[in-house]
Image: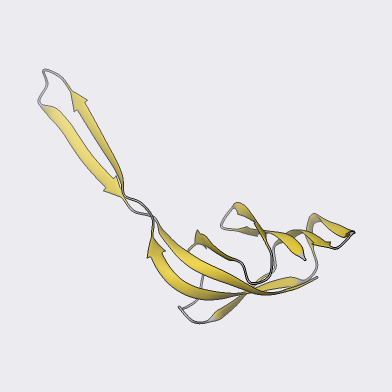
Length: 102
């Protein structure tokens, strides 16, 4: 079984027992969440495509909260004594798909 789900404006192709990183969701580490934004479900040769969503849900367990790679930026203007350094680390949830029902 295969599903295409939408979390945080991004689409992910998932199957049962798969782990992946998605943007932070509402939930604590160790809890289970339900995702109702299912765009497509494939079960063998049976394919359901939503307009825009398929009825059903995907259950996922939150395994951890992790940080992505550090992104650093630097702006510099010559002869004006202007320089600016900034950085950012995006936080993600590590999710494991437990069940797909659609």
